[in-house]
Image 1: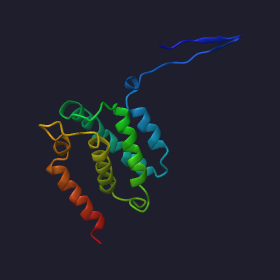
Image 2 (image 1 turned 180 degrees about the vertical axis):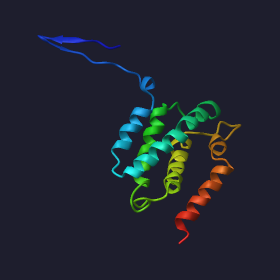
Image 3 (image 1 turned 120 degrees about the vertical axis):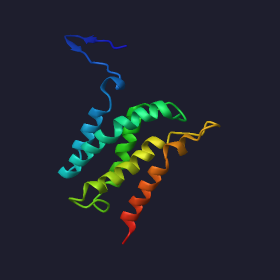
Image 4 (image 1 turned 90 degrees about the vertical axis):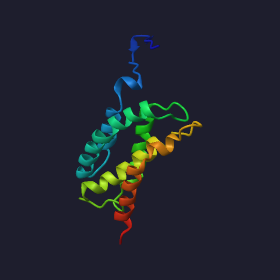
Length: 147
């Protein structure tokens, strides 16, 4: 419930919004704008649009979480993981977009998969990380550590 209070001649007002009303896009847009590298900003925008909507739908309908977690929390965790992963030592300036994608997918796996659990019949953690994801991660580590 939102209220407006009056203090003397000054009226203070505010707007109340549910996080679900805005969705995740404004948060991500603001976060991407804090990044300095223009090619990084472009790559991240494409990757968020490519992966996050589908990932959120799949998680919502196919998997069980340990505790209810709002979608925006997964996005916040994803952004924090990307902050520590997308650094010049890992992704030098003007790196190929595939390198950004590898780190992005790795961060998605942890941001969304870390909240899943085993309910006695189905291990939702394992179902989330299927063989295709493992093969992709193997390729990531091969690419990163081949030298």
